[in-house]
Length: 79
Image (tube, rainbow, N blue to C red):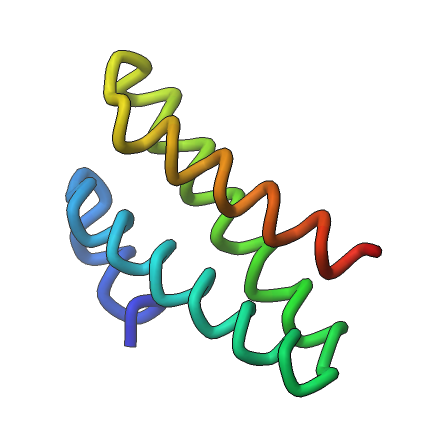
C-alpha cells in the first residue's frame, strides 16, 4: 500500500517514515524465518527511505537513530 500512496504524497515525511518502519519490521521477521533474500530487499528499501529522511531533515535525532537501526538490521542479514 505504501508504494502506491507515496508517489501521490511525495513530500509526506510521516508517510515515508511509517513505510520505512514497516519495511524494516517485515525484513526482521523474514530474517527470523530464514528468508534472507526477501529480508534484504525490504531492508534495502527501508535504508533508502531512512537515508532520504535524514537528508531532508539532518537535525532529526529520530530519523538518524532509525537509520542506524536499519543499518544494523541489514548487517545482521548480510552476515
